[in-house]
Length: 480
Ligand SMILES: [Zn+2]
Image 1 (tube, rainbow, N blue to C red):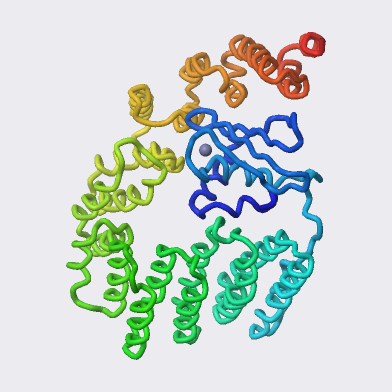
Image 2 (tube, rainbow, N blue to C red):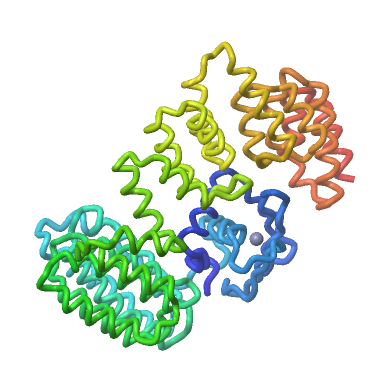
């Protein structure tokens, strides 16, 4: 796997968390001591240390993170940052230069897939002639862009043809050469397309049904979980009487021998739902261990304004300490409290939403609060933080948003390394403290890395806000 493409190794969910880390500026690349080893720190609940080793041309040899989770979000964030580097090191040899905007110039919608497939065929041809698998990643990125474009523009027929080309031609070559696709969870990532195409009413359902049947037979590496997701997607066709036999047939053949009760329940539930069977609700209540089914119930109860049931169904899923993953359950609960016109419940849930890391919730909470008591509300939240109710990074956001410089100063004096993030806020109210902490920060960095280059941004802060002469003195001091 080439360093430029390694970010594709991750599940969509982990990938998005990685993007968050990158966008929040929490990924720091340490200077290279060895050109083959990337040393990266990702700031989370604690700093996580990541090491990625590559060979002479940039193929990843090993990757580790000291959080202990396999394929974690910190690694995802590191690979995303590395893939965006402008550096010339480890560039991919041949560049196909596929034209991403190709679709926008095609006038006849029936021809859309033809141009995309021409490009993909070119990539496959060059890759197989040169035995250069990295080119397939380039084709894969192009394919993803084009599928997004086609789906966004409701060209489902073309999307299906492109998907078929990918699955039939490229994937069969790719899986035969190595296991990249398995590592990057390729098949799972196709679920979204299959789902959109199936729900489009533009295609011949029997064609997609037989495609899915064929692919599951063709590629034994497709995981049970993914097969289940695909069957769930196809169940949308059960709304048509004439297709029910086909659906039942594909479900029976693909799920044969599947030892996965939850997945089987989700497939059966989806079939019942679209075939409009009467016992869907009763069936759902008996299968609440499935999030898919639980979500369905939440939706119907919300529509029926059966708010207490919504609250109960959500509450069972929300963990004791706020986690960003729980936002999907906190959302409907908020809606239920709104339906009940339960102001207290609504506010408490909104606050929880904020603690889970949804920044907009603070703004919302402020907008519905009598401004005369807002200070007390924030004081309460600060108190709750000190009782361990939520994470540091939400706390820092709260202090910045609410301009609580005093508490921020206390926080930074206990966690001095955060001066790097917080110094612009504290500069005017606490110049002396900022000065001292920056000097310490510079010294700490020097002791850790022993390199003047990484000190210069901080020395510039000293020069700019305090004294240029001292800035020069610092440079002299650490040079020697
Ligand atoms: Zn990690």
